[in-house]
Amino acid sequence: MKTLSKAAAKVLDILTDGLNNPGDSRKIDNSSFMAVHVEMIGKDASGPLFSVAHYFVQNGDMCCDPDMVFLRAHDGAYLPVSFQQAIPPVYQEAMDLQNDTFRPRLMAQLARFANTWMKNIKNQQGLKAARAPKAVRKVVEAPVVVEAPAREPLPRAQRALFGNMNQMSLAL
Image (cartoon, rainbow, N blue to C red; front, top):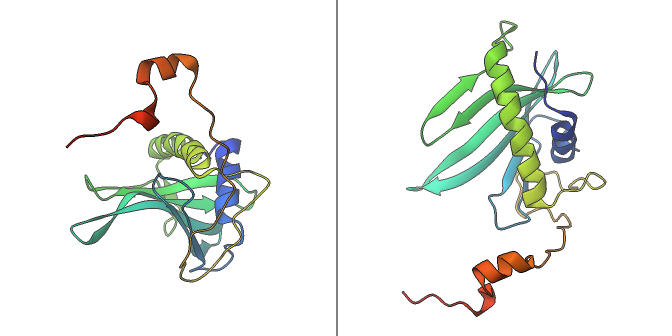
């Protein structure tokens, strides 16, 4: 079975830290990118199950973009269980925990996607391995604050290409 990389597992450890019971959840929103929603959705004989998702609203409906479920095995490794996305509608199940079956090719594809996604979440939300988000609530009302890295000025070549963005104005 294909597990996530060690780097992706570290990000998931940060995201899931303190989520010990089904229903425990958090929302991390430290940037202008989509917030990350994390919830412990259950426990299996093989370990706890966590949902990690981004959401957006379209026509009043909450749409996942995407929502993945991960199993944290007893050895600490994470395995992708399922992937779903609202638009276009996609649902893929790599592991059937009820029947103890899995689809190795799909599991490998989902693991590759999740490795990249966790790297993006870490960078976009400014997560640091030494600090895990602290707030755990049944219903999250406020974003968890995690120190974001300082922004560096654009390199000279990009400044020359894009100009000073602060001096630009849009006329509509």
